[in-house]
Structure formats: C-alpha cells, structure tokens
Image 1 (tube, one colour):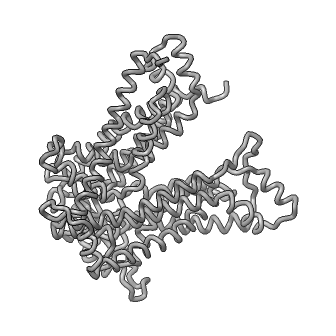
Image 2 (cartoon, rainbow, N blue to C red):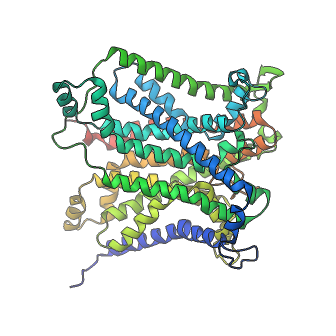
Amino acid sequence: MRQHLSRDEIILRGAMLIGALALLIALVMPLYSLLSKSVQNKDGAFVGLTNFARYANSPSLYNSLSHSLTMALVCTLIVTSLAFMAAYALSRSCMPLKRSFRVILALPILAPSLLPAISLVYLFGNQGVLKSWLLGDSIYGPIGIVIASCFWVLPHAMMIMLTALSHTDARLYESARVLGSSPWRIFFTVTLPSAKYGIISTAFVVFTLVITDFGVPKVIGGQYDMLATDIYKQVIGQQNFEMGAAVSVILLFPAVLAFVVDRWLQRKQAALITARSVPLQPQPRRWTDRTLLLGMLLLSITIVGVIGMAIYASLVKYWPYNLSLGFSNYQFDLMDGGGWGAYWNSLRMALYTALFGTGFIFFQAYLQEKLRGFGWLKHLFQMMALLPLAVPGMVLGLAYIFFFNHPANPLNGLYGTLAILVICTIAHFYTVCHLTAVTALKQIDPEFEAVSASLKVPQYLTFWRVTLPVCLPAVLDIAAYLFVNAMTTVSAVVFLYSYKTMLASVSVLNMDDAGDIAPAAAMAVLIMLTCMAARLLHWLLSKGLLQRSQRWRSPA
C-alpha cells in the first residue's frame, strides 16, 4: 500500500530536493569541471594525462611535493604534541588560569593565516627585532612556514584534542590506582589508549590544513615551493589554467586520503562513556600541575607575542627608521590593495555567509534527520555534505572558475559578484556546520514530530516552537563559525574576486606583494579585531537568548 503523504511532507521533500540540487551545483559540478579541465589542453580538447606528465617532468614537481609533505609532517608532529599538552593541562590538571589560557589559545583562529607570517617577518626578518635568534638562518623558508603554520593550526587541533580528553570514565583510573600502577603507567595504559582516536583525528586535520594552506607559504615561504603556491603561480602568474587544474588534482590526493582514513578510524572507535560512567575529577599533583602551568605560560606568551608584534607593526609609522606610533598604516585608500572598500566587502560577505549559510545548513540538516522516507536522497545528501572537508579551499576556488565562468553555464552571471564569494565560502565550510547541526538535532527525540503529527500540528510549527529553540546554541555557533571563517579565508576566494568585490583578506596578500607590509599587518589586525567583536557579540546574544529559550535545561 502506498504511503499517503501530507501537504507538509510534500513541501519538505521538495525543499530537500532543492537543497540537494544546490549542493550539486555548488560542490559536485565545479569539481567535475576541474577534473575535466585537468585532462584538456588550452583548446578544450581531451589530452588524457598529458598535463600531469608535463608537470611530473618539470623539476619543480619533486621539490613542491616533497616540501609540502615535509612541512605537513613536521607541523603535524609539533602541533599534535602541543595540542595534547594544552588539552591535558586544561582537562586533567588543577593548575590555575585555565579559563584565561583557553581564551588565549583560541585567538589564532580569529586571525587570517597571513597575520602570523607577517608578524614573523617583523620578528625574525632581515630587519627583525629578534633576527639574531635564528643564528644566521633565514625566516623566509621552511622555518617560517613551520612556525606560522603551527601558530594558526593549533586552535583547530586543541579543540579536537580537548574533546577527546574531556570524556573519560573515572573508574578506569581508580582501578589502575588500586592495582598499584604508577602515574606514568596509568598515562600510557589508560590515558593514551582512551584518546588515541582523538590524537589520530587531530593529526590528520593538521596534516590536511598545512599541506593545503596557501597564505603562509605565499607570504613567508620565499623560494621554498609548495603545491598550493604552485597552483597560484600557474593560474595567476602564467594564466595556465590547465596546468593549475592538474596541480589541484595532485593536491586533492593527500587531502582526500587523510579524510578517508580519518572517517574509517572514526567508525572503528568504540564508546568510552556508558550509563554507569563516573566523570573524572582532576586531583592536585604538585609537580605535574607546575610543569603544565609552565608549558601553558610559554605557549600563551608565544601566541600573545606574535599577535602583539603584528599590532605594534601596524602602528609604527616607518619600520625600522621611525618607530613612533600612529594610524597612518590604516589609511588603506592610499595603498594598492583595495582600500577600505575591501574591508566593507568582507564584512558584507561574512554577514551574508552567516545569515544565509546558517539558515540553509540547519534547515537541510533538519530535513535529513526528521523527514520521513527519502532514504536514498538522504544518503546522497550526507555524502555531498561531507565532501568539502576533503577539498582544499584553493582547489574549490579554481573549480568555481571553470564551472561558473563557462559561457554556456546559465549561472555565468554570478561570476565576479559578491554572491559567488558567499556561495563558495558556505560550500567550503559546509561540513563542520552540517555535523554541528546534525549532532544537535540527534539529541531531540523523534517523538516530538510523531506527537505533533497525531495532534494535526503542522510540522513547520513544531520546527519553529520546539526544534529551533532547543537547537539555538548550535545555530548561534554555526553562524559565528561561518562569519569568522568568511572574514579570514584567503585560499577559497583568491581566484574569484573582481575589482568591485575585493576582500580584506585578499588585500592583505596584495599589499604584501606590493611591499606595503605594515598596511598589510594593519588590515590583518583589523580582520582579527572584527572577528573578536563578532565572538563577543555571539557571547552576548547567547547569554541573552539562551536565558529565555534554554530555561528547561536548568533545574527547577
């Protein structure tokens, strides 16, 4: 017997079809265009693997590939170790100032990856204040790439590691102590095994972020070629789009491999928390707490020092000859980089991304979780929603050129507008937001929809009165995440802007290329301050709105 569908279900199924079509256009079709372009010549004729063979025969391939892998592996080792230490200190110790450390270690995520690179130039460059610390080595190259990459990737790694270490059954530690195990033995037999999937996931995330990053090697890499900068040189420097597409496909392989292995490991992870679990309460350990406090102080001083140097450099009138302070570097209209218009464009783009992106992502996640039937479309949608996590921003941006700039595409009119920047940014950061929304929606019992249906209450009213208020914290988190990333992203939009839609993050890159390093630092600082203001607004909104909509969470 065919199931009778209500009018609401027909409308919602139509909405899910439209959402799937939107993801198909924003993700799958551009990537197909990129793959097609990589096996074509300049005239559009199929040439097979000729472009890959030409690139493989060039001396730069081995250097770029080996450099990218080396930098990614070194940064993965350093950042994973530092993130584990920081997360362990915040979740398993009784050291003081935990809240302050948590705030400081999250600061790099609010700044574009270009900021630490520029700051390191002022600290260790040819006229840097700490140049002698490098003992004759140059900051322009692998040393600078490693330091700057570790700086901006650390908050991403720490959030994953903190989650892995925050959920532990205290009974395991009690049993180990009763059996007479030493603290070191407990660490290696209980702590590390329980956090191994978090550690592995952190390592893959760091590896992917570093190997696909463009901003850091572009500013401070010097002559140290990497795959991401090779794409930029082929497209912007030589207008060789076919070769740029081929390099993009090569860059896709390590990112996709890391993503697939990470997802496979997550499926093997077993639940560590059961209904009988007892939350772990850290106990004071004098020397351990002091050692962790010292490590966190050094880490925090380094982060504050890098950010502080960028702020100071943005205020110095003429480095290093006139160190008096002023705001002359903030006169962006006098510089070659897009002026204040670039900043306002970024602000508008970030607001549109947060507004439309949050609405679209949450509603589509709601349909996937709460809509009856349509199983095949839900599985297809889930696959497309996870795809952006394995696609580097620069690769996605180049794919948008091939797809949206094609004369036969009816959506060709979007190219060069602010709309395409918004669409690309939402697509680039879709996965994390989708998983956040799905996680929040899974916490709501399906009985709400069943009871509403039995009482003849329209499903949209249940969504508005029950689902949305319950999931409001996740909705606000998604909006804040999209806004901050839209302000700071470089790689995803560096190929898509026009002279009318220049963005602040791209203007930092252009000013640095033009030799206006101090104004570039000023724009990077302005982006960071804007993101800080957005996070503060997010906190205030959360505090006000959640007090009214989340009272049910508090005990009577």
